[in-house]
Image (tube, rainbow, N blue to C red; front, side):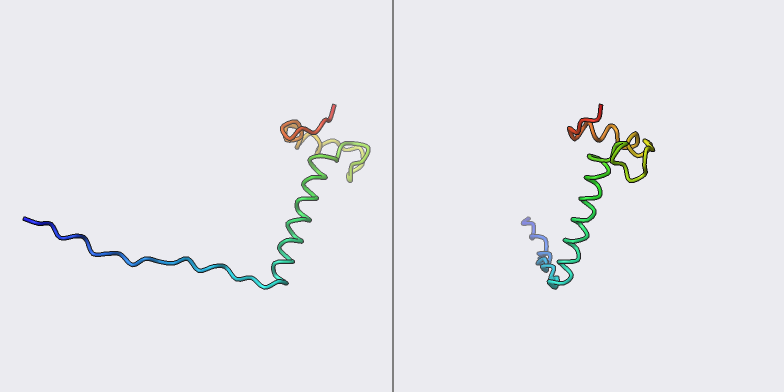
Length: 74
């Protein structure tokens, strides 16, 4: 007794995301700002150059990430 093949399921084609140039510039600018802030707080902020003065709480909060990423801090 032959087995009939299963009915073919419809194939969906992904639609590309279309973004205007102004929206793309906003996303790129926001991403760059976030990246620079993250770089500062993880890589640069330590005591003397701290935005928060001599407070070391932020430095200690990201201390292990600094070592993982290769930033010296001692």
